[in-house]
Image (cartoon, rainbow, N blue to C red; front, top):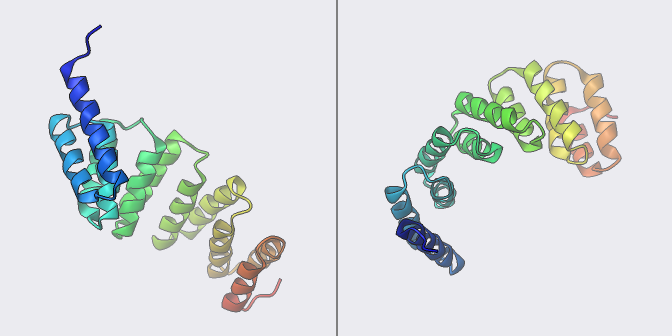
Length: 192
């Protein structure tokens, strides 16, 4: 059985990129991923890998371009693709675009707790606090032992003048994250 020469070329480039990454040569791996994308412009592995590598190298604008190309070519491939795009957009203060990307991630995987958290933070930045409460509540349902969603939820309750809700969360956090509960008490002046 013969294999298409293009398949062998693709496999070789993939191995070469992984090899460069293994020995810490990110710039050389970037050249290989760029060659892959030049040959196969819509290749999901190449786009995702180069986007990730560009983000690590501090080239967020180029990383966003690749992440956008990935979700444009493969919109239903993975909620993680949309989450990664949303994260990059949020880092670039493109909060409205990040919100939409978080929502696209959640449309593919409603159980993706970190996307609910990211959506909640984006909605806070956009000043849509009631929507942020709903997103953060969903995050805490999916990740009940993580203090991050609880912390942000308590802060939003304080900002929306619901101190009793914030106190309830502080009391809850005392049961498994007393340091975070104490931090909230200091920051808000509320005691559980």
